[in-house]
Image 1: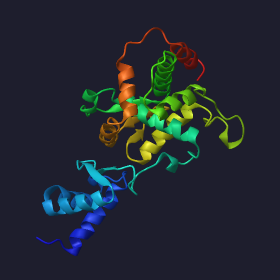
Image 2 (image 1 turned 135 degrees about the vertical axis):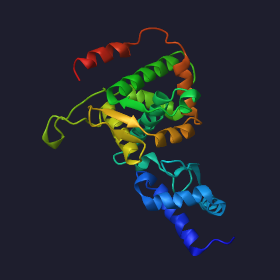
Image 3 (image 1 turned 45 degrees about the horizontal axis):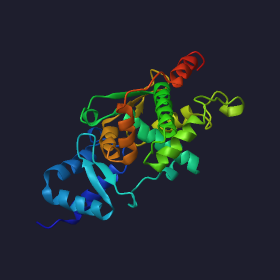
Image 4 (image 1 turned 90 degrees about the vertical axis):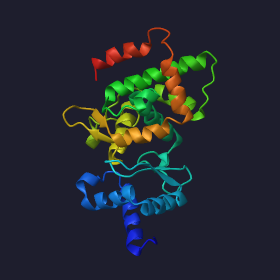
Length: 257
């Protein structure tokens, strides 16, 4: 059967919704209609997949959360860390990449967790402490002369540990706000970006509390194929070699933050 102009319009409509990740089929009858066509009509599915393939993309999921896309790094649809607001230099890109990869390892430390669709909650404070402790372990790894195979990760832990957890503005409109010079700012900024992508929700009932969505888990399965995630997961599986100074810092911070 030959596809009609309406069929191609529906394919375009479906892809347009997929590129707006906060859209949900459950709240949008038109999205629900074109998604149902993709699920049930082989001709529509094949044509949509071919169109996405030409753009360097592919469908990761067509579940109730909508059409979730994965893209190749060279795709015009690909997101780049430099596209993030406020990430204009190498230091910012390193921090953003470390936090995003760290969130995947924090929520899903292994393959069995990636297969588990239970809800994951993230506290900005707890995650910052976890990531700081991970960076301390990477520092020990480096001091022992062991190679960290991912250059970006090797650079990023140094930047993270060079920054304090919390610094607040003291004057003007920024008074009381987290500053870019602290790691908690970057944790909050990346979780906020994930929320804009439909991959996290801010919990209004608690300060600094977030929920990671199913869309995040779907994308996390792709991140789990990357070297940085695999190396972090391996480090996390190793037994801790002793008390970390980070735990003392955490206890101190709880009394001051």
